[in-house]
Image 1 (tube, rainbow, N blue to C red):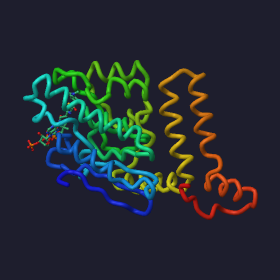
Image 2: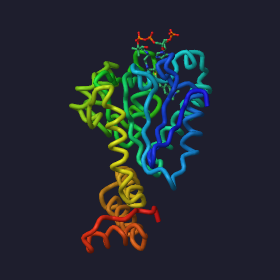
Image 3: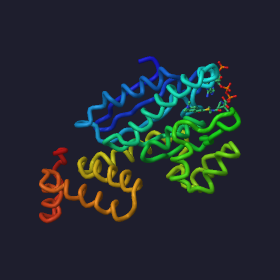
Image 4: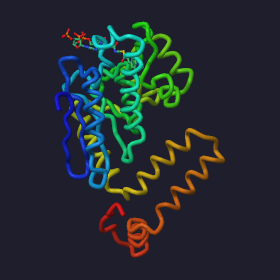
Length: 258
Ligand code: DAK
C-alpha cells in the first residue's frame, strides 16, 4: 500500500495513515487503502486496533483539499460516500479501535477519530471542524458524531465558528479521554489496547455493539438490545472459563474467543 501501513504486535493491530508530506490528509487512495486494511484485519486473532498518523505533527489534517477543490456535485457525493463507508466500517468494526491522535485532527481528521471507540492524544494535538471556512459542511459525520460526543451546544460552537481547539480543551469537553506527551502517546495507546485485548473478546465485541446500537434507539429498545447481547455471551468457552476462574479463585488461563 502507498499510504497506509499495518503492523501486528501480539493481539493488537496498529494502522498508520502514512502520508506525512500532506499531513496525512485523506485523499481517495488513503480512503481506499484504509477500507482494504480494515477488511484484511484478522478479527479472530486481533483484539484491539490503534489508528494513528505518521510523523510528529499530524494525525490527519482533513480530507484532501486539493483533490476536493475540483469535484463536481456528483463526484463530491461519491467522495463523501467513500469516506462515510470507511468511517462507518471503523465505527461498527467488531473489535475496539483506539485513535492515537498525534497532532492535527482537523475536518475529516477529527471526524475519523470520532468514528473510533476511544480517543487519546498528544499535547500538540489540535482539533477542529473548519469546513464552513471552506464553503462546505462537515461531510464525514462531523455534524452527527461531534454532537453525540461533546453535546449539542459545544458541537454547534465548534462547527459554526470553525475554531480549532487544543488538546487541553479537547480533554475538558470530553472529546479525548487523556492527553500524553508525544513520546508517551503510543506506549499509552498500546497499554490501553493490551488491557482490552486481555478480556473476553466476545464480551468486548458485544459491549461495543450494545453501546453503539443502544444509542440509536430509546431506552426500552436499548435494554432489549443489551439483554440479547448479554445472553449471547452464555454457553461460550470464555464465559465458562471467566466464571470458573473466579469461583476457583484462580486467574483466567486464556480467553479463546469462542
Ligand atoms: N489537504 C491537502 N493537503 C494538505 C491538507 C489538506 N487538508 N492539510 C495540509 N496539507 C498539505 C499542505 O498543502 C502542505 O503541502 P505542500 O505545500 O508542502 O505541498 C503540507 O500539507 C504541509 O502543510 P502546511 O505547509 O500548511 O503546514 P502548516 O504547519 O503551515 O499548517 C495546518 C498546518 C494543518 C494548520 C494547515 O496545513 C491547514 O490548515 N490545513 C488544512 C486543514 C483543514 O482545513 N482541514 C479540513 C479539510 S476539509 C465531504 C466529506 C468530507 C469532507 C468534505 C466533504 N463530502 C461529503 C463530499 C471533509 C472536509 C475536510 O476535512
